[in-house]
Amino acid sequence: MASARATDPLASRDPPTLPLYLPPPPPPPPLPSPSPHHRLLPAPMAPILLHLHPAFLAQMDSRRTTSLLQFLKDEGGIPSPEADKKREQVIRKLNKIVMDWAKVVAYEQRVPPRRATATVLTYGSYTLGAHGPESDIDALCVGPCIATLQYHFFIVLRQILEDRPEVSELQTVESAKVPLMRFRFSGISVDFTYAQLPAIITSNPHLLQKLDSRSWRSLSGVRVNEQIVQLVPNAQKFQILLRCIKLWAKRRGIHCHLLGFFAGIHLAILAAYVCQRYPYGTINGLFTIFFDIFAHWNWQIPVSLHGQPTNCRRPDGSFMPILLPCTPPEFCTSNMTKGTFKKIREELMRGYALTKEPWRHDFEWVWLFAPFPYATKYEEFLRIALCAPTSEELRDWAGWVKSRFRNLILKLESIGVECDPDSTEEVDHTVFEPSIVCHWGLIYKTSTHIDISSLGEDFMKDVINDVYGKVKGTHSKLTMSIVRSSQLPKSLYSHSVYTPYIPQYMLGYQTPTDYSGAAG
Figure (cartoon, rainbow, N blue to C red):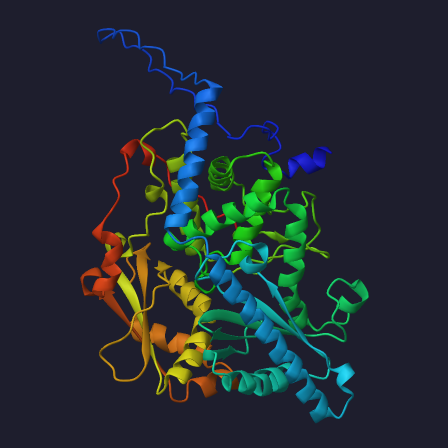
């Protein structure tokens, strides 16, 4: 028991019974000793302590919960029933497509059709009931062992999908840790992964032992979803909390796995952790506690929904270790770097500073969810432009380059430059070919000069480091340059047109600066 409490950063806190967690006020600073050479000043007044009635706090909590739910609705964080029905239709059609595809595979391999069944399993925010109108559908194609990933999935099934009128913007990311196809089906984005199984059973431990490593990673999303649903005490509160956290993370620019920030599974586990510890918390209380817990979390200790010490080896260089709630235990895949981890901690601390005083009448949710002001925050930006002869080639090229973005972030950090990648994409109007442009805010930690030519050449070596990358880059281009904030597209200044007024006392927090121990 003692060892379990020693590994729990919150073990010393009071039992989670109140709807709100109110930390005690910090002690006043010590008074200076009076000097005999100076006139004695009047004795300072004792600090004023607020003794708030529980009924008043409950009333304020109820008001904030109501206003938060209304804000979430007004900002489009909750899809309409019609949109949900459309998603259900997409999944049914996809399931029919892969069943027909399995028959094609069986005919080609000359095996009985009963040995080549296939199905579609969903996971991610949609299956958890926390998706928004613009959320992707994360779907897993479970196919027979005779259907290979490289040929039957990425060639045969891709061709079938391309021939469908509902499918558009199809691209493949074949050499990623979890290979996938990404496309729009009736206008809804779908991330489509693949796992080979001898049968459609996801929880049979003997069956899982036979999986290859790629199929195992593809299937982990489905298994994790099942565990999260079982572990949260109140599904509805969890879904609303996760929607709030995702909207906040997107607005503040920290919800993009490829750019080194949170992935959806990270946020789902953090939300589930809060719901587990405070099963009777209100929506506002849970959201407030989320910032309190993780703004002060000791990241030497992994976040675990099972609450038990684990012998699972922590990945090297892991900044925010989060355990997947599955057996055997394993850590979430993360692309975080020192710089992106720093921004995440700053945003968590900002959220805590804005929400820590629940009795404030002048609080507005728009302060917390204000879009991150890239254009006014940074003076210089790394401009990354990608172009290709056709839109189809650009989608494949961009997907491949983005899967290597972490290497570029690490290259910058190795020369003393942290960066804040903006996930917004623009069109390069200076070229005739299809193109996209990204802008990353640059933070110079030393008096470093970026040799942009050398940086671009080194990154291109990473991009075309195998046959797949060379094929993608045959007719496609990647260019880099350093631009000033005044050279940014006007659309990037839209976030800075209106800056909500935030009282200074609500932002009186100290930005965390100790990151060295996070990746021990």
